[in-house]
Image 1 (cartoon, rainbow, N blue to C red):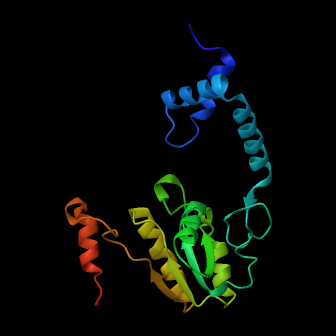
Image 2 (image 1 turned 90 degrees about the vertical axis):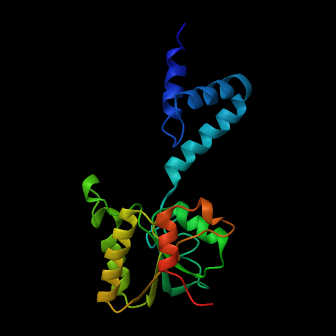
Image 3 (image 1 turned 135 degrees about the vertical axis):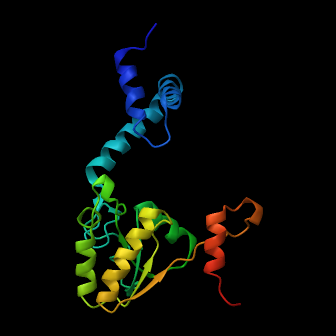
Length: 198
């Protein structure tokens, strides 16, 4: 016996979420229909409202319901320091983890010529305009330590250097609380190369 067509569509739609395969989507669909229809209606309403009303901040490109996000609209943040991240999720992690008081720029990805993602697709023209304003004095590159993330960081570093802007990179290496025997060789090699005096 096959599922009703609408149920099949619901299961297929749930698979658009990252990490959700066929079995997980099926479990979610059955749970909502059998045990939590009110929760499903609430979720549907929030999804619709979010898709309609959440856009991007015109200044930093993070997710926002308003033209300027609450971070860019905060006069107590230091506009001379700009942390550059790949995604709005990366921005949120930094905000929750540390007491950083500068601004942000969200790329929305990373350079990947093989996938057709170049400087324009990740907003580097807009970033260069921010550099040209003359307010930014230091950038903190917080792209992911992947091949594409490193290439993106280097490209942005070159842009900043051309404008006389100091570039720093977040530290990478052995995580706090980590044990050396579980750290991969590339991470350990990078940690040794980037060691600092104490």
